Figure 1 (cartoon, rainbow, N blue to C red):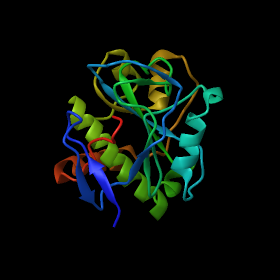
Figure 2: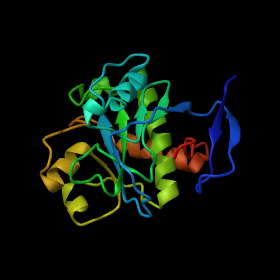
Figure 3: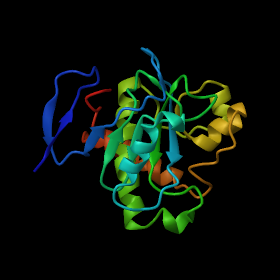
Length: 206
């Protein structure tokens, strides 16, 4: 079995984990270099890429292109997690909310509907994304709660979608992860992942 690596919340002391959420690092140049001391928000996106093997890699390749002028910290599909930006750096994923957030891109579409989020592929995506989000929240002391636009304007800390950032700051018209995204189920998965202790804390470049 391939070994993946777990880093503690301070980014040191790697140890091999069997059966952990797989990840790789595909660096994006579309980034503002920083050494952020405080991260307040996890922003959930949809890639607008169909449910297929390699969706995370395809998204990461797009972020690796300087012409894209966009990026996110993590790309997640049913079998893979790819990191594209270190958490301490600012990814270009949600205008108006980039400075204090970590962006996670999920394979799928904002318009795929409730049934689309309930199939086995999407369930696997949600579980892997929940593990990533739980790790981000643990590292930065972020409450595992749902945020909306008004919460973001009030500088509350938690987990929201790109649509909520658009509502809060009016700098984007993006509406992902969509009106049928299963927020309650996702937050339950995030909390369960945090309780279970199986969270992949961070990739090597975090």
